[in-house]
Image 1 (spheres, rainbow, N blue to C red):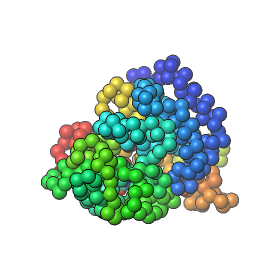
Image 2: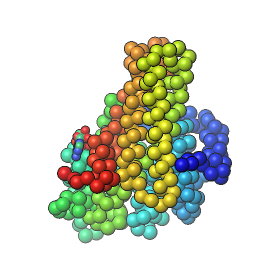
Image 3: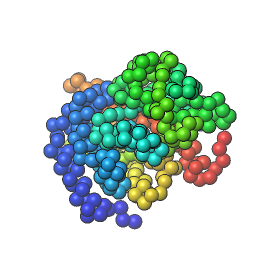
Image 4: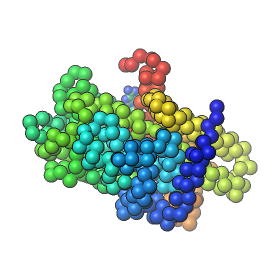
Length: 383
Ligand SMILES: Cc1cc2nc3c(=O)[nH]c(=O)nc-3n(C[C@H](O)[C@H](O)[C@H](O)COP(=O)(O)OP(=O)(O)OC[C@H]3O[C@@H](n4cnc5c(N)ncnc54)[C@H](O)[C@@H]3O)c2cc1C
């Protein structure tokens, strides 16, 4: 099978690379800001708006919504380069909420949100998880009562990562007490500045900020409902499929750095290290080929629902294995943090090691991905 890009796609890839090289100063300021764990600040917004200004945040969208009406492969090329240069390969708006608005939102929602998403002017925080509803998302309990001319929302959310800098909450809430539970969930777009919303920080072991979000008698207009009432769970599943699609260009970049380190320090003479490095090369290449296969499926209008799960699992476990191996290569020095003269490669992998735990859990844990592959993909029974 030939996985090469076409000559036009290669030319486009070069154009994107040249853009990021030319914007090196903005890129490095944004990367530093992102690495602080606080999310987007002025530097991230700056580069995202430059990318959005070129139509590259949502290149597959129609032109009237800020896209370029290009095929999915172009989006994949941009995602790879964004991940490589910035460590951010998409926004929640561009990659998850936007596509659902495009397919199920009202005309007013399309007019209000799609252009600002494509231009990199607004961001969404995913409002799914609650203390009792993580893997079992259908158990969510935050209530959105239909009060005739508005919804009244009460309850709380846990681990809503972007809520402290996003403008909008992509909120899954219970509108009906039904059996089965998933049939009573609706999806809303809520302005996070609405009175009654409180956002409280939680810091992960990787020193990234996520949040609890509390709703206390929050009045939300009827127009905030996405698609049909009580159909929210299906829209969330669709958005989750988009969320699980990623690239491995960031891991490839870091792998080359570690390979260089191993060569320079002579650690490659150790047969155990050589074996581990070879294994990583195989894993990374497999993940890259799967990412390309998923991109190819989307390019050909096939739905990669369990393949997206395979990709999510493979990328996050490869990342975990990669940082774990890096720590083993550094030995005891691997644990020394940035700032110390003993820190290896400026302590980057000490931080990445802690940070990598997150990707095993977010967007569905590895066990849940295996369940998705076994049931949706291989036809094995649920339960
Ligand atoms: C840093 C961070 C950022 C996050 N950001 C967001 C965000 O922005 N928005 C959002 O809505 N959520 C977010 N989440 C929440 C995340 O999606 C959930 O943590 C995740 O889905 C797991 O849910 P849980 O924590 O409730 O664990 P649980 O669901 O309680 O799982 C606990 C353990 O049991 C296993 N398990 C559960 N059910 C099964 C099963 N059926 N079969 C086999 N094993 C199972 C799990 O794999 C896990 O190992 C974030 C989480 C973290 C840690």
